[in-house]
Structures are given as structure tokens and as C-alpha cells.
Amino acid sequence: MAISYDEVEVGTELPAQSFPVTRATLVQYAGASGDFNPIHWNEKFALEVGLPDVIAHGMFTMAEAARVVTDWVGDPGAVVEYGVRFTRPVPVPNDGTGAVIEVTGKVAALLDDRKVRVDLVATTGGQKVLGMSRAVVRLT
Image (cartoon, helix red, strand yellow):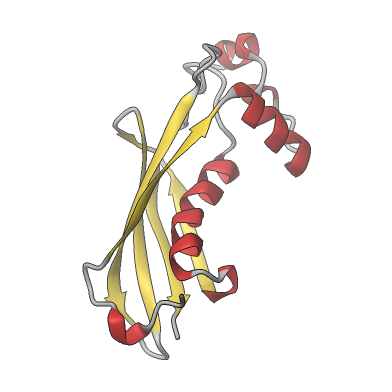
């Protein structure tokens, strides 16, 4: 069911989602994206360059956050603008569990032309990992 502009208001919350991330997830994403930077798969290298562990790809984290918006609106093509600032990496330990990216979102502004701005908050381990995470969505 499509979300109608007339049904939302500032403060409307999108359904929160949790996205598990394991080392296997990172290998799959590296293959799909072509980003084989060793900080995403080589623990020794990641530690040598000052990271806390292997970290998730920034674009992977960004994409998972966007899923909250696309799942809510039901049409990825309705997203007309999306941007984030990367504020903290998502460490992914090699412990069989990995990490979890938690994402919440809410309508922050009603715009012209049946568009809304959705502000997202993405965290892992209670730490915010994306800043200024915003999507502009055209509703029906």
C-alpha cells in the first residue's frame, strides 16, 4: 500500500529496523561492489591502520539505512534525494555474531510537490554511525 502525503505529518515515525552484519556479509558486499579494501576483511591490516577491527563498508551502512525509507514508501524510485555523513565506522568482530546496525526514521519536514524529508538515525552498539542522514521522498 502506497504512503499518501495526506496521511503523514511531521513526526510520523517509520518502522525501525535492525540489520545484522557479519564478516560473510562484508565479503558478499565486497564482491558486489568491487570494494576489496583490506580494512573490510583483514583484521591485522585494519588494526595496523588504527581501526578498532574490520569495519563495514560506508556505502553498505548507507544502503542499509536507506532500506528503512524504501521499505516504508514501497517504491525505491520515490526516493528523489539521499545523503549522509559518515561519523563513525561499524566494527564487525569475527565472533560469529558480528554487528547490528539499528535504524530509525521520522518525517522531519513536509515539502512542496507531495515530498517529505525523512531524517534517519543509524547506530551500532549505541553509537551513532551516520550523521545528517536524510532522504527526500515523493509520496502519492
